[in-house]
Each structure stands twice: as C-alpha cells, then as structure tokens.
Amino acid sequence: MTAAYYVQAYTMQPHPEGGYFTETYRSTELIPQSALPGRFGGTRSFSTAIYFLLESHHTSALHRIASDEVWHFYAGGALEIFVITATGELTVIRLGNNPEKGEVFQAVVPAGCWFGSAPAAGVDFSLVGCTVAPGFDFADFEMASRESLLKEFPEHREVIEKLSEPGFCDF
Image (cartoon, rainbow, N blue to C red; front, side, top):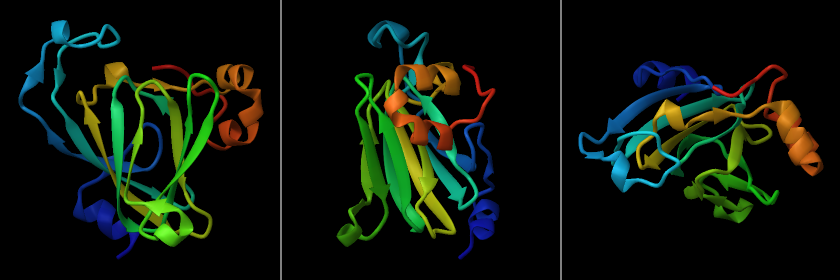
C-alpha cells in the first residue's frame, strides 16, 4: 500500500501542522468545563481519535495541546516523535513495528509538551493514529513560534529548525 492509497481510502485532508488526517472518533458524551482543569476553556468530548499520515517530505510542526495524546503505529515505516518538556528535556520516540530498533507500537505525549514528528530516515510514509482525552479541540492547540522556542530551548536548535517554519505563529 502507498501513502496515496491510505489518503484516498480514509478520505484524509491536509492537517494544519503538516501531513494528512481524518477524524475517526469523537465521543458524543461531554465533560463539562466545571469538571476539567482550568487550562480547558470549555466543554470537551470524553475522547477523540484520528488517523494521521506523514510522507517522507512532510514534518509535523512543533505544537502543544492541553491533553495527553496517545500515538499508535499502523503502517508504513517508523515515525520519530520529538517531545520537549517544560523543563527542556528532549525525548525522541520511535513509533513503529520493530522493537529491535527501539520502536514501539504506542507512546504517550504528555499534555503541555511541545512535540512534532517526521518519518524516520529512509521511510516513504508513516500511518499512525492519535487518541486524545479529554477530546481534542483546536482551542487547546498552540503552534510553536520558532523564534520563541529557540530562545527558550537553544540547546535543541537542530530539532526546532527541522520541525518549525519561520512565520509559524500561535493560533
């Protein structure tokens, strides 16, 4: 199967951070704002899920959300997820199907961490899934500013430049 096959088969659309996606699940039950931590500005679905596909020439730009996000590997080659915590720790998660290469089928990006991703070197595409709880809402999505991240985390210049574009700004 090719990237184009999956994009068509799952009616995927361009994602604002890069690549393609389609929402596969949004809980019909809602969590009231009063039951959520203060970082949420309204009612949220219990959970949401998407398919997400990046081709070799795509990156998922650095961004952060207010919820934990569970990533799942489905097809293609390994995806590298770069996570920068509030204290500046950089972790690279290899999502894939080869444990001998340090790859895992699932991984969690904690709420509030900056993260972005790209297919590993030599990979044509990566098809993954993302499950968010409380459910994803664009009100909780913040695109990274390259300039701001370079000031805050200069030790991660290579990753920040790879996964951000000049002119990206907060939504």
